[in-house]
Amino acid sequence: MITTKEKQVAREIQQIIIITIGAVIAAIGLEQFLVPNDIMDGGVIGLSIIAGEITGMQMSIFIVLFNIPFLIFGYRRMGLKFTLHTLYGVIILSVFTSVFHHVEPFTDDLFLATIIGAVILGAGVGLVIRTGGALDGTEILAIFVSKKRPVSVGQIVMIMNLFIFILAALLVFSWETAMYSIITYYIAFKMIDIVAEGLEQYKSVTIISSKPDELANVLSKSLGRGITFIKGEGVYSNEPKKIIYTIVSRIELSIVREKAHQIDPNALIAIENVADVTGSNFETSSGH
Image (cartoon, rainbow, N blue to C red; front, side, top):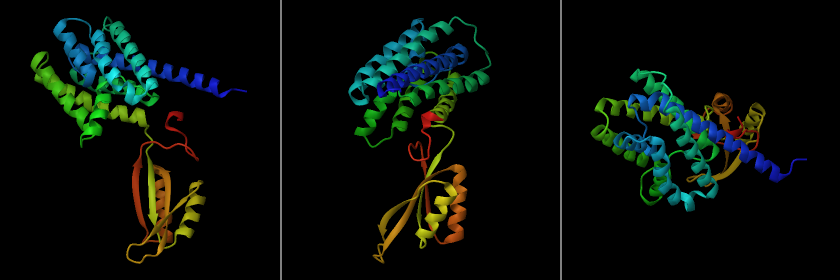
């Protein structure tokens, strides 16, 4: 029988393997597509590319150096495990960008390099984030600042990267490649979301109906999972209400709408995106 400790060790080994794969994939995207064509990403990687161009040294050195302050800063806020995973991923990224630096790039076509490089880079970074680490310390800083100021993490990262792209255009690259870099950043950002959160998007559904028991019974049979009642009260009528709550996949959403319309055409249906869901009849996002 496998003990809890053995399961934890096996999970940790699995996470290390995935972080390694993600960092190697990101290194391929950088050194085989983006860097040879003077196209850059944002964050620490972007700053490392600029520093490498200015000093003539390999950017792999700066990837580690520039990330260290962010890791120290984020240690107390993100925890030891996240910090160690991130440090390991950064080191692997640095090693393999150095290795691939001496390999002939796949293409010198700017358009292909931008699109394919961004997809590969985003896939690699997304794998690392999905496993509980990061390859870019600027996001740690963005998380901290967002808690102190009324701006989102995404907005802070975007502002920092805009500054980095302008810096790159002024110091090392042309405005044309800086604009290609913005496209790269956008595609990589979207790819990170797809890999980190998965293609499947779950939806939380809240239904206010005059026939809650009948509708909940039908939905439970149709979806094959439990339905939750939330106790509510009408503001004007002061009458108690049973509010139906459940989580479904995009495909199952049409079933919910159809059944609700059949039983209570006047039912109020509110739908929200859910990035991840665990437990009940759902698989975890890391278990797909």
